[in-house]
Image 1 (cartoon, rainbow, N blue to C red):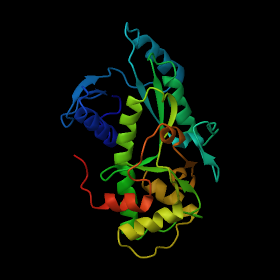
Image 2 (image 1 turned 60 degrees about the vertical axis):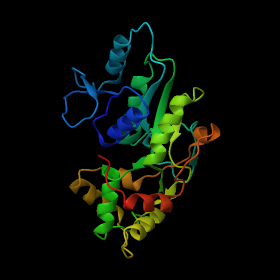
Image 3 (image 1 turned 90 degrees about the horizontal axis):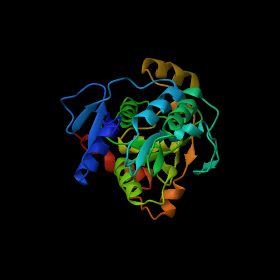
Image 4 (image 1 turned 90 degrees about the vertical axis):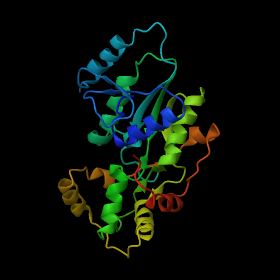
Length: 266
């Protein structure tokens, strides 16, 4: 696993190991706090897509190719999709470059990977206590900054950590799933509704909206990207559902209520 030392990568590694897999973490620096075997990359990941693709081809001259290559990606590849319901056949957006641009380059770099089956996991915001996305939402809400962002009409695609891990295991078992697969809950939510649910879950009163310019200032202070809050995508997991995957947490209210009392994984 590449990226196995991050918060989400650790959760996936633990889940795969529990299911009986022999997990090996690819890392540029050995870490004593990882529970799994580690192999050093040797060189940092290249910025140039073509150079990265060449390295993938050169490093995978195997007599027996891997049965499955799971490539992490993001629904941000669709940029700001407005009101349109986005399924797997939807074309990627031209921008913003830090969202769609990076996602397209990352997918292109893995397109030539030598494997019997390649799956691009275009993933929503994964809600899991102890991870940056969840903890940032919790902190802002508890500080009284849990009002809608700008108009509040932008769509948020999200998924509960349990459904994310179950979906990855489901994809691994179902050979008919290849190419792009949306890993997201079936019911995206508008920002205004999401923030209202968060206030209820964390027992906070009504909070004033945060205007767009203030988002830019706050993002700079938090070293974040304002586009994460100001853009939206109404993505749905058509291929997962057609293959028979069942979501345990399809509704945001129930999902966030289940998560607020959880202790961070670790």
